[in-house]
Amino acid sequence: MAAPSAITELVRRFREHHDVYTSGSYNETQLRRDFLDQFFAALGWDVHNTQDYAEAYREVIHEDAIKVGAFTKAPDYCFRVGGTRKFFVEAKKPSVNVKDDLAPAFQVRRYAWSAKLPLSILTDFEEFAVYDCRVKPDKNDKASTARILYLTYAEFETRWDEIAAIFSKDAVLKGSFDKYAQAVKGKKGTAEVDAAFLHEIEGWRELFARNIALRNSQLSQRELNFAVQQTIDRIIFLRICEDRGMEAEGRLAATTNGANVYKRLCDLFRLADDKYNSGLFHFSKAPRFLVNVAKTGFKTLQAAIG
Image (cartoon, rainbow, N blue to C red; front, side):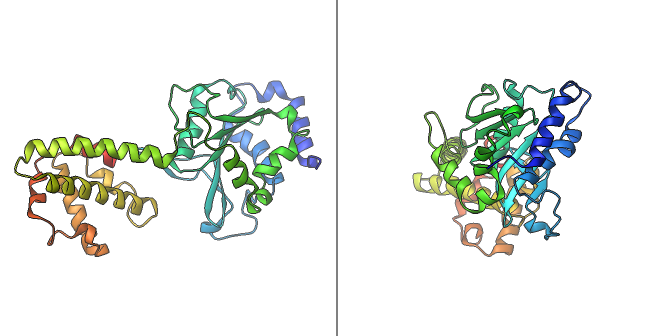
């Protein structure tokens, strides 16, 4: 399949005015409007919601809000099918060195890792990089780490079939995107989100257990294990509720601001008990010893919530 005329025109324009576009004065917003919006429209995406879909079903979300650690971040583009995220695109102005700069690569990988997306794109139009975002990102990683495809704009016309076969709307709807993601999955050195999360929980569990046992010597091993696991389960449940919009964003993290962290966290648990009527939050039926963890030092708790 030949590249659409719109892509040929974008490539021609970028080539003819290369010096202007790669100067520091040409910014990211201009790039998105002049090039990237049209690039992804050529891949079949309704970039500007011309179909007037309801917000929940828009195909492209500009500056989507995602939780990254304790902060809310906004990838430049989020591409969705039926309201489900498929991949992010992070845009940079063309003066940025996409191939070699560490920070932009870490940024897009961290966004997609946090959102549990398999692939995402970093581009300034001049360069186009695809990352396997199931590889846990580290800020000291090279820009090439987990990068599975790299092109320059000069290759867009000759390799358009390859791009469209993965990232076009049609390819996503037909499952080609998912097949490609599966094909590049599991390379040596990768750590998937769920595996890393479980490892992190194990760290919380160990720190909680030591802290609680130190201050509650009367607890049996069974009671200690119950107290630790119950606290972790409650925190994870509320974070999932926040992520799905069932709880106010950041409400859980706000309990770590100031003193009496555990007391305020228990107040939140009690509200959840009333709201969800779930056995997870039943204080009236909980073992009495749970009250004794209230005076524990909870730096670990702050790390877990954040």
